[in-house]
Length: 525
Image (tube, rainbow, N blue to C red; front, side):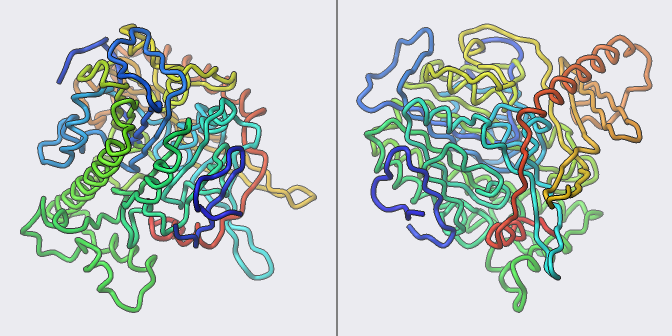
């Protein structure tokens, strides 16, 4: 395994060891915004300013994707936040196409990102945040399902098309063990790569920027991911006090206060952080929101460093920039904090911006709802690379050209698994309970199904944008429910058929580094 020094060789995968240093015009009605904030830049060396490209075709351009984990759309000024949380992204939006309503395909990191990169639904690829504890000779190991090696990913398709590929990610649920390295020649999920966001290094993307500088004369794809603003919310100064300067409570507000708890591991500190939150005190919840906004502002500052570096490298103006997140965050809207196993609006609506070369169509707003599952087909379409057959999403380029669509947007979360071992000791994984949501028009239909039965919910977002009042028992929804049930049944049948061919067929044991990173994020309790 080579360290990241100098220019990586084409067609050789490098898995970085974890200890290694190194308002505008509207195009059409009906577009969405996402809960996973992805930042994609597509550029081409020495290409002319594409001021006139009516078909929006950019063959040979480079691609950079940046995912800002846990970023709900309404935390940004362009989506309604009143506090100055995102001046740089708000400015970028004036040069970008903004998707007003983007929906993630899941509410947690691993399945959402894998759907983003494979354009397959979570029940098809079956990569999940859920771990199965295997007890062997008095020790415990954490096992998860791994992406099937034959599944095409954005990285593998671009690599086959001649791109050199890299990923710099925050680790944890985006780890090599689950198959996120598939198609990447360089895959860096080490704790010291500046992308983790929840430990000492916060969001410092210099290592990723160095790789881009080294490869700027080649056709490349880079995927960047950070856990800022994932909890615990510990923004650095001045953002630790910017949005709640008068707080005098017990919740740690920054790293200094967080680490003041001596004699504890990071996991113990994280558990103490959440235990200090009084859910019944609105003042404490307001402080959590303020610190979350401070993290968002810090992420915005870090994105400026990336934008500035790209300009200095001569890549920015000939680049497609897409920004998104994998899922949102809850602050007791439905009784929980963080992102639990639910598919309500605050957890699946995420931001999505696409900046085309030269800022084409800059300031346009697309209101047609879309999903993160559509991002990979869109990028491949924009750079004129053929889409592999298995992908379930569709390209958004027709929407960028002024067309519209009215397909429902579906999200999923596998809630429970049945895991058994065959005679050879191999783990067999079977989804037992699945949560699905279908959004179309002004309505949200949610179905929780298991072997023992099902539960349904229906929300009228026009009158209830927060999805708080279930109207499934009210009159006037019979035909709508019939249609939603049929659509979701057809979707489920199609996914089950595809899962037979594309679901992960191997288990992976998480390394201790990954377990430590998950502990820092509040998992493995």
